[in-house]
Length: 248
Image 1 (cartoon, one colour):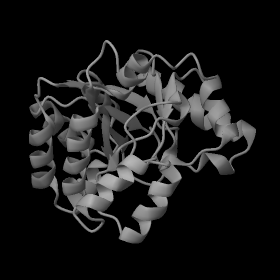
Image 2 (spheres, rainbow, N blue to C red):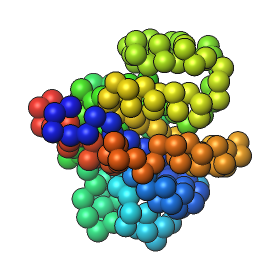
Image 3 (cartoon, rainbow, N blue to C red):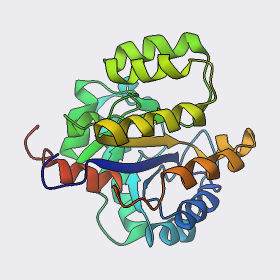
């Protein structure tokens, strides 16, 4: 990690739920940066209005998340383009500026979807691959952990899909059944020891539904305002990695 900090913290938050406004305030309180991925006409959940999106964009990066949040793999070429490019145009109209980052709805994509995102003019795309600490492919930007407790039967195959021996060892050492914020802290400590990008992602509505704001704040307090850490948006991480133009 020459000429940059050994440890980077970034976060990302999906779907555009109205509770993202509360989440943004909490992140700002702790000096944590991140990217909010917004689907203007999300068919699954209520979303923020344009004024709230603009207020978040004053402090954070806002990325594209399609128009309606479908499984992009199932769409025709024309519908795929409408969701990806149309969502980008609509969000840019709201923000009055360019939208560079994209997140695949539910992390689902294939080669055709990836190409559509490239062709739409995005710089990179985030996935839901977990337990990773670097970015090798800007169109498959991974994460380190989902801010959600999951059944242990999910953890093992997900580690396998992510091909992260390092993440799996940390997870196994801490315990698969520990709460997610305990695992998140263990993964952060691993980043402090070995270097890398600690990337937490999730949904504001999940924090609300499970009553996890206290634990979330405690985690942010542990990882925030450290002199040995740089805090970045997803887009800044990709630009720092210097790979956005190398893999097309």
